[in-house]
Length: 171
Image 1 (cartoon, helix red, strand yellow):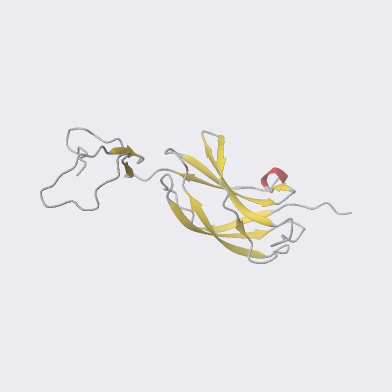
Image 2 (cartoon, rainbow, N blue to C red; image 1 turned 90 degrees about the horizontal axis):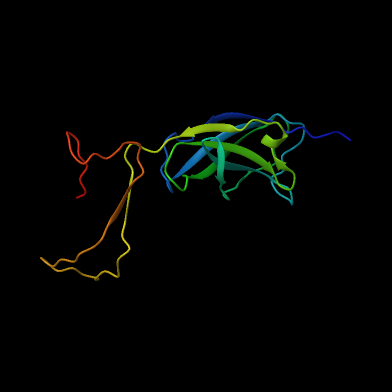
């Protein structure tokens, strides 16, 4: 009986280095099977691409967004996957770790294969505006007004200044 060897060599990818909370991106990732077994596309134990978010070295959470292989990938073969990436749930600087998982067996990284690590920072300017009021009228006539409480969150990488040469205004 031959032990299986888990192996992946990460190739080109277009993972964004700036991503805001809840922002999504389509990512193309190329990888080579450097192990000694064929990565199955399907069945009860498929291999798929997964990602996890780390902040300050701590595993924060992982996505349930699996990206399945388009076909079985044999040793030495190259495959390119199109993954859907969702930004972290809260603002901050993160390390995104792409990893492969062999269902029912484990993470490739736990078996000695490298992860593809990408440092992700929030965009320079990124805001989220919300309101907890409602319902609002279907129509608002000319010169008619309603009062609305609005919440604004700064998810960007710059502090908003109240005054000075470059103050931030909500309009």
